[in-house]
Image (cartoon, rainbow, N blue to C red):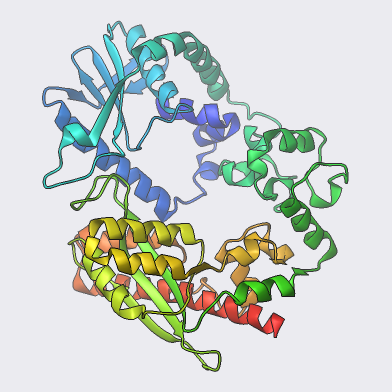
Length: 465
């Protein structure tokens, strides 16, 4: 049976889908991350809520015909509905997903009057009880689905034949012409000769399909084999140069100019948030981030031996917004630079907080003027190291500039897990002891985020002194 799920997987990478069926030990060797688990949980939550729009509908109805399997989300009479836990239609997958079901149901002899996609409405703002008719948008895509049916049917036949074969497909998988972040989980198995660090890891190469395809088609996978004539961005050239020469690029004057913008006290600040698909509190929209935690390291003056640490973590089930804003208001005094990493995130949260809490608007407007993005040093290429691997993420910069610090020994090692664990703490059926453990782990993680910024600032400062 070719299922809808395996058809969509096949469309993304043929060989990955084959391995899932015939060599599951290889496919499932990649454990789902907390972030991926959260996506699945969110999808289930949204699907259950959408059913309330159709009290007399049929749910998860199974259709098997001619070797194809479709399990529908919602059937209301002869109207087909597919629920997506997204704020918009993804034309690359959602329409093929729905068309697969349409084709199977038609082959099973069912007349379909309409084919519809249900997704969340990003413009919806909760006020009181959830209004399902405003939370969800239903888009009738019947005509598009009918136009796609023949093409999808042809793909379904190809996929069924490909996946039914007992003989393992030879050669690389379809992800060979995609950037590293878009690779399937079995990429290294299917492409054993591709280096762990190579052309697929060039900065933003996944957005330069022509360039990557040219390199791959020329069997160029190592950075040292890239011809000098290859058209590359300055950032990509710097990435390759530092790797090949095992040397850093450090613009001390430029770093010094950047740091002249800073005013003491220095406030190293980081937020942790949870993106609830279904708005949990008033004045929230689908997937709008709930700020539940921050960490703050304060360096009072250039002579200070160590920063002061302050923190906030909301552990209740209610909206953290007011408590978060009040605590931040008390901790961020009236002057001094607020140093963050990737400032668009914190600044966006500040704007949303100001909208929900107008009494804090002036405060957040002033904070906006004080914000400095430490990531800019690396985005502007004032410091480039081969071990950054072309990234400006703090997780790559920290081991180079402050090798004594590491996330490896923490229970929570990245933001996706922090978000998921907080949600588990405030909504799950857990004991006080388990709650205390999660709370400690969250604090440890967020504290390291801001101390890491302080350490990186200190390392850069030592370069220019």
